[in-house]
Image (cartoon, rainbow, N blue to C red; front, side):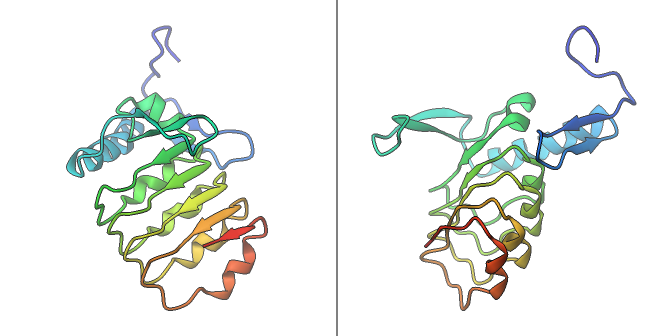
Length: 173
């Protein structure tokens, strides 16, 4: 790492945390490209930059909503609230946000969830309620740390038996 905080070209960069699966980028160009994909998707869907949303129903008095436009903040993100944006899809690169513990995607128009979400091994809460999902990729059921899973108000025909793999699950909606 250079003294100005940037990485030298050709160095390996590992992003992640203990217990999670680190992502390894062979150079800063790949890292930048992944982040730019998020930023482009967020802009196309008019998702705001990260901002505080007051809500008395939360223990903290509120939560942050949106997607940060700063690469470092994006990769360190632990909670992502993007609901009521009428999103029709999630980019596959969502699986690169390995520090996420809470992912709230309710009240959108999602028809499918990318299987890359399985890389989010630190998730404890996954809310997919009020979308247009007809199936859930079986890979999601390997997220063994998920405690709360909300699939309510979708177009699901069945919940696969692989849900039994989610050994920490205590709330299913």
